[in-house]
Structures are given as structure tokens and as C-alpha cells.
Length: 430
Length: 165
Image (cartoon, rainbow over all chains, first blue to last red; front, side, top):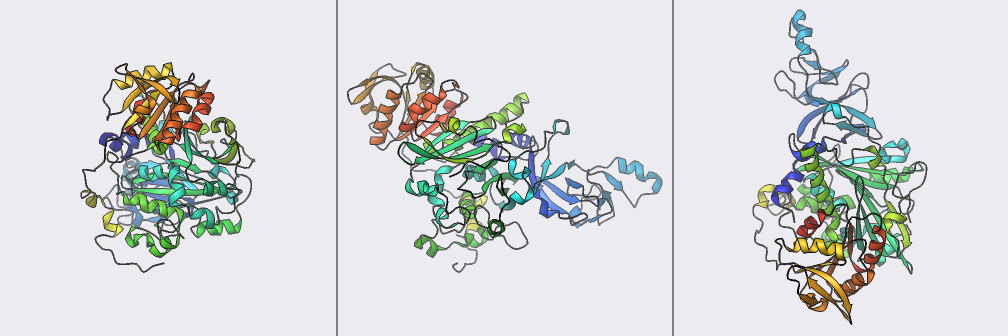
């Protein structure tokens, strides 16, 4: 249960809102690098944190992310021409470089040209390519943090794969699905047996044998570590540990030698978000088969409406609900695929769920604590200027883990090393 | 895949809109939750006594006093009166144990077992104490469906509030 004013505080991320200010403390995923594949390629419209932006890659390979609309008459620069070191508005030819600085105003007399240009600059944000992702920082330039160090983005490119999809609801209810470990035994119960990116792991037998797991939530420097334990061999527990790093990064515990995967939830506006979904292996290239499975929407990825980042299964086609498959037990909810099983239910809550009406139980403690930490960090930033957790790159050096531990051992101690990035070392997984 | 129907009033495309949220039933027929918040040691008891003086949704705030044969003696944080654990668990649907470093495993075990036997949801909140947190967690782990290890005591009322104690 969350009071309306706190729900509003956590779900509104536009300019000038407290949570919006907090998101603007971080480098966040803005686009996939594939969206700007070459110099002078077509610009891309992108909305982030309720700001309409245009992204482009200039003739020298520099990335730009700036106000979508021309300073002259408010025309969308999506219709512009990306050429000769800048993006030119197709209405009257005004041209901007990657910083948003006007560099040409052809209609003006030459002698006034440079003076006028110097006074016209669109709001812009830095954008850098790290891994498969283009990252941006939308906060105060004077407080630009260190570049992101997430392991999935820093391993060699052949070891990582990232996709993104549009989710039609507020970012927080999507994120909460990522730290709600108790739904996995139900909604995703089909995936362990059939999905090529999950099946075959030794640890799966514990999941399938014990459908009433216990939970342990431990605060970390960057957010939370959420441990889920199930019975294993005598005197031992099977632990699956999910890190959540503020504001919206999660990593799903691995299965066997399969790649590790997880998500970033990034607000588009208050009623939509981007879900960036990564898969990576710390020590080996992904196989062609694995990458093909990811492109085919297996694991935690999904299929797309061709030519878009909208899921093929979406609210307009009732997520391709298949009641026969549900009856047969092929899927638990009738919706195919883990990501769309989650998205379909999260979107069904409405664009922004009213958390004053919910009835949380003890197994929702991860969600309760995540909200509490977000709430506290937002207030600390707003009232005292305290940098929130997750900005410090050391907080980003986390891994998930799936391990068997003695029954009397706390996972946070038994997995202290396993939950940290160890370059060149394999992830802890059974 | 089944045949897909055109978008109708009951389809997801319309049903999940903000406009349709206006028509959700706003008076849920939920019975009020009946929670027991039990301190397992002196430090937790001080917190529970403080919390017990605030406004809640009917939750009882208690302190574990001692084990008695097949039961435990609890003390009400507000009134100071005593009650048996078995009496307090009558009609309860949630038990939240609060513990600090000096919590004893026996108290957690008695309460956890009693809650489990009655199919009552149980949770444990471990107060900040980095030096001994592991021991407390070990004592509580077998006896609570959920354990939360806190870094800030101020989070306790927020967690309880979220659970509608």
C-alpha cells in the first residue's frame, strides 16, 4: 500500500519532478546503437523522461541527442537532413551540430549569420556508445558522473546482446516485476522446461521441486540484493539472488552456463517505458545459436512488430492470448514468452497503477523495500542534494548468482564474492 | 495461435487505459488484516513500544517475554498486559518478528513454528547491526517466510504500513 502522494512522487519523471530529477543523476540507456548504425544515417525520434528528443549521428560519427524541434518555427527535426556535420531542418534549412548549436541559418544575411547562430542552441544531452547501447546523461553538466560500468556493456561485444521493447505502462510497475521473485513459480512456470535459454540447468530441479520459496531482502550500497531460497539437498538451500541497483537496473539469477540476463526500465513518459534487455556471458562469446534464440524472442527477449520496437504481442491483439495453450499447460497465463507474460499483466494494471488499493503480503518485501529506498533517495536528493545510490560506478559492479549454500549460511556472506563483478571469472551458477 | 478478434470494448487495448481505470470498483470488500508485530529482544522491544503508540490498522504490538510449555508469554507493548502466543494467534493472519543482534533463536523458533502450524504469513525484520546481523538472520531464517535486513530503523514503520499492519 502506498499513499497517492508517494505514488505520484515515484511515478512522475518529467522535468522538474523529484523523481525526474533523480533519474537525471544517472547515465541511462537512450537507444540501441543499432538505431544509429552509420554516419549521416536517418535521425531517430526518442522521448525520454517526458522530453521529446531527436537523436542523430553526424558525418564524423559523433552522437547527438537534442530537442526534437527546430528553434525557428517548432518543426520536428525528424524531417531534417543529416548531412555534412549536422542536422538540417527541412523547412528553412537551419542546421544544428550534435551539441544543439545552430551552425547555419541560410536565410539570414551573411554578416548577421554567425552572430545569430551563436545565440541559438537547442537543449542537448551528451550521448555515448558503450556496448550495444547509446547512453545519455540528462542532468546538470557540472555534475556529470563517471561513464557507466555495467558489466554487460563492458564485456567484448561478442559476449553480449541487448534488445529493447516498448512497454505501455509506468516504469515503476514494470521495474517491480523485475524484483518480484514470487511470481516466477507461477507465471513463468513453463519457461524452465522449454525455453532454450533456461532449460538444462542443474538448478532448475530445485525450482520445480519447491514452489513455496522463502525470501531474504538485504540492502546493498546500490539498492537491494533479493535472495530466494528453495530446499536443496539435505542441510542445504538453493539460492537465487537478484541485484537491484537504483533506479532501475536488475539482473536475473543465471541458470547453468546460460548467459546472464536482466533489464533496465527507462521512463519514456509517465505512462510508457523502454525496457532494455541484455544477455551476456562474462567469460565466453555468445554462440550463434544463443544469439539467434535472443533475436527470436526467447529467454527474456521478445518478438517485434516488424521494423519497430513494439512487441509483436501487444494490447492491440490481446497479447495473442492462446486459451488452448493455457488449458494444455504450455503456458500458465495463455501468453507466450516470459517478457510478454510480464508485460501483459503489468500493462493490465493500467498506465499508472493505484498503489493505495493494493494488498501487499510479506513476499512482496522486495517491492516494499525498493519503493522505500527510492522514496528516501528522492527526498535526500531534493532536500539535501545527496547523490543517490547507483550513480557511483562501484555500485554497478554487481552480478546475480544461483548457488547452493549450507542452510545456516547467510547468502550475503556465502555469496559475497559471487555477487561482485570479477573480470575474466565465470558467474556463480548451478 | 488462436484467431484474434477485433478490438472490442473488453479488449486489452481499451481495458487497460487510464480512462477505463475510472470504472474500477473503489470499495473493496476486504476484511481488515489482523497483524501481530512481536519484538524478540530488548532493543526491538523499545522500537515496538514506540510503534505501538501510533495509529495502525488494528495490529497488535507485542514483546516476547519467555517460553512456557508448548507456548510463549507475550507482553502488550501498549498496555503492559500479558497474553499467550496461542491466544494472540487466534484470528491473526500476519506475524512480523522484529529482532536485533541479541535476539535469541528460541523465540523465533517458537513463534515461527506456531505461525506455520496455523498457516499464518510470517516475516522477520532485522534491525541494523552489521556486526551480528548474520547470526540473527541465521536464527530467523528457518522461521520466517521473508526476512528483511535493514540499514535504517526508520524503515520499519514504512514496511509495516505497506503491509497494512
